Structure formats: structure tokens, C-alpha cells
Image (tube, rainbow, N blue to C red; front, side, top):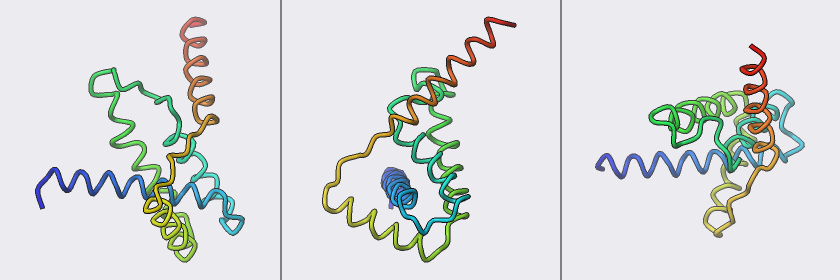
Amino acid sequence: MGWKDRIRSWARSIKREGIALWFAVRDPRTPMLPKVLCAIVVAYALSPIDLIPDFIPILGFVDDALLLPGLMWLAIKAMPQDLLTQCRQKADDWMQNGGTRPKSLVGAVVIVLLWLGSLVLVWLC
């Protein structure tokens, strides 16, 4: 397997895990801490706006390459394994049936508020 195939495989697994966490947020059996972590990851991953815009050289891709996978790892580690397995199966089924990519307007609003808050702090200082 070449490096391009490994990157494609990694990208597919990130997508699958994101969808699995999306299902976990909606599952009433998910404990509170994992649910909050999953909600943060899902809101950010599915937001149409990045915390660090991609047009900023190097830093623009840090959130996609490091921050998001790190948060996903933390949320996955906090999940009960049996529930995570069920959510992964739902994600696999959803992806195989051509489910449309969900979006998170809440995540977009939070990111816009973070940017506005940062601008206000810079202006006041």
C-alpha cells in the first residue's frame, strides 16, 4: 500500500469516526462526559467554518491534521466500547447507503463567536 492509499484510508477512518461520534451524541445511552466531548468534536468537525482558516499557510491545516484527530481520539477513549462499536456500525451503514454529510450550524456559530471575542480582546488591549 502506497502513501497515497494510506492517506485515503486515514481520511476515510476519520470520516467514519466523526459520523460514529455524531451518532453517539444522539444516543441517550452515551454518558455525559463522552457526550460533551463528542458534541464538541462533531460541532467542530461538521462546521462549515474552521477555527484556523485553511488559507493561512501551514497553520490553516494544523486544526484539520492535529487538533481534530486529537479531539476525536479523546472522545473515542472516553466512550464505552460496546456503545462505540454500535455507533461505528451505524456510521458504516450510513456511509454505505450514501448518507449526506451532516452540518453543524452550532459549531459555525461558536467559531464565529470565538473570532469576534478575539477581535474584541485585541481591540481593547
